Length: 550
Image (cartoon, rainbow, N blue to C red):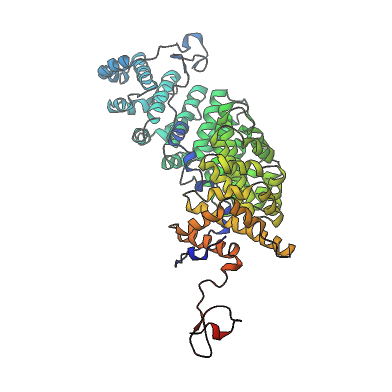
């Protein structure tokens, strides 16, 4: 029962949560999902991925189609090997600057090998040796594909380092040189140019924009992917990854510069290769993270046939690397307007989302709850679809016992129903245990989430009041009784001490509206004045005044 004496008045109450905030864009909820190590892995790649068990994979790098020019397998350099080579780097510099084609090729291979090691490649030492301008010259040697390729590989690995390392390549004309090599008749050189541009674009939004502005770079990359003869799988992987780097970053790229790649990414989404699928989905997730008026980017993606159904199908992929960006893209799409959310729902993603709620990977559960919360922020019909898909009970279970960051997203999903659903919807979520779960969340330290949950509880209690009034005969608010049964009343009273003004105000409002009993009526009122003698009168107004006047 509400204790009137516990209300502590405060002033200067702020405005509550705006209902327009219920559908939340990506930036508000997924900062930690973009872990730094994930981004580093995604943005830049050192070209040692073709080394298997310490050897160069000859199958991928047959530079010319003659046996004598096949690449030979070389053992991986040890730290001692690199140290020895660095101590004699002056001789390598002399050789690379010579006019002897064999010497400069051998020296270039040595530099490439030093920079292809897994850990702590000596990028700065190589830059300090002064060989970068010479390596850049080799990129124009169209009559020597072997040297051109080795130089491109070496430069690519320099660009895989820090921003300072990438800056050296950019300042030496690397972007223009590599964009030009996208037209190379040699597929290996061409692929290396794709890789290098992916590393440069992945370094920063500024370099990404420089790449996109250079000589129709995006169109050349699209032409490689759409070539009449389908590119080999390594080219397809690198081109998809490079394209995803063209689409990512904040501030976001100029949509006009990347819009042409959306049909290509939609096409890549139909591939079966895991790496291609992963980077194609990431690219779509970057594009659909849409802050434009009218959600123009989401609209452009939805315009592509079969994209929605394919993304939903990929939720059932056996690899998390594919599932995570697929789910993120679906989640981004349903942050659009009600029509865009409806476009996704027409492809029936909800059964797949139901399965994702029980997966072992916490990231996927969190992404799924966030996605559902943006659907429940929609129309009453969209909320009904969520209910019909049996998503409420697992959401309530997550609220009761998952990690807090997952619980938080589930709380938004349930609270959005309480804010935008019909009375029948609110009664249903109560039947699934929502009141108990929401009361538990009130104990958290997140003030904004507490405010969201308080709004949800107030809306639920309003329905309880209506039901009690409709029943008549002095019926009680059953939902208020449930709040009290689950210790919600004590929690609400405790929230009056909360440092956040809005939390205090909303908790007091709920207490006053739904938990003030009849015996509390009139408590704290000023005593009446006896009209006969002007003195205070205490007690019932109907009692004889002579018994209570002094």
